[in-house]
Length: 196
Image (cartoon, helix red, strand yellow):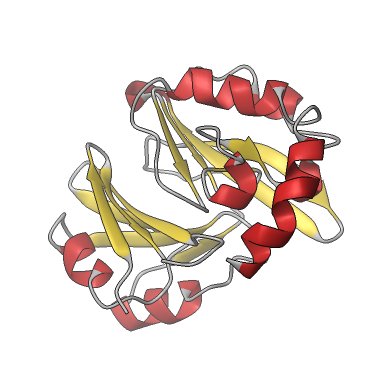
């Protein structure tokens, strides 16, 4: 089954139709396409290649192996796993978490005011709980406020769920502000979200 495609001014996002809404991106910059946390799909490769030639694959979360290596090898482009910097791109690397079992970086594109977050924030139902975006369930007690609150994105591209193309700064702020207070809602909603 093909993922749902979301086209936007940065490129294309593909979203798996599942409870976790696994999401990947093809981002166009300076005539080259960067694939971010990609997974195999029927329609996504054609949509990504229509943007331009691929430059590389970026894996932003340690456990988001997905199909990153397979795609990079198959296309003949480099895989940058948890990069500290991404030279010759407009992206700035934003460290999110570096724990024993959770290492995550985000990307900030200042010119486009775009923030790409693979796991800490999402719009899938288990993250958002009816809001535009929410913090990962495992990070709700200690959300990455210090790492993310300085950014005022106009767009949010996430590893789980649809991209937010307008008023993204407000959605990010709301997700961080309500992280702890929404824990009771998460506990009530979680059984149904997991089954769904």
